[in-house]
Image (cartoon, rainbow, N blue to C red; front, top):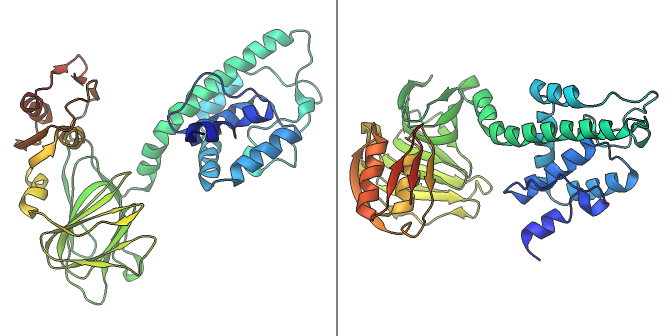
Length: 362
């Protein structure tokens, strides 16, 4: 059975609730969480449904995380207002939330006795489904906004698309943040720590053997006493490039198995661990510090993805037949649209710029 089918059969429709409707999220875990969200918003809280929910929630940590994110977003004032505006008034004598329901269900679950029995039941259910539609829409939007909101709350320093910023750290070290990047700092009680939340940063670290400097990202931790290196972090991988000195790189889940990099070395960390150490040219790999993007024989799709970070508008690729076409170039990053246009011409891909800055390939 396909993964999506396995995830979906564990949703509330398996307990007979009917699910969240025709909308389908690209992530099956999130999609199932949305089904439960809407089911509980609709007042389903019978023992069979709650048992099925608990079984689904406990079967995979990702299930609990996805639903809890929705539960957290239920506290958004916009979501609360949209739900209350369209929801029918509760019937007299409505029962309180079932004490058997998990705490994260408190904003959603209504006891079975709380369902309206008035003569205008059809109108009430129409209002309720409008309420659910509004709640679902805001939940879907919230799922997309949640990472960015969390980034804003967590980051000490951020850069926008196309922006590059130099930051003096509390210990005298220097940090250069590339486009669309964010970091959180920890220099309390003698520590020297930076968490790379997103994007890429170049670190020029002041030597202090008694206080190692530590950078953590999504999949790796880098530890140094004094050196210069760059860390790039995205959802799929971390990449560490050493310019001078030495660094120790460890997988986050296996801190006892570090690798040591020499100048010109690069290593990538993913959920599977560390890659083999590879050689690279730091001048090219770190050219973004000078506002340039230098690449040699890279796949067209990879180049577009990198330039996407510097372009403030949306980029849509309709034809993927040329994704693997190898291209080389040396471009200024202050005009990413011109760089994209040139790379598309080299690869033989049609590029169209629409009103609003939308770029379409294909």
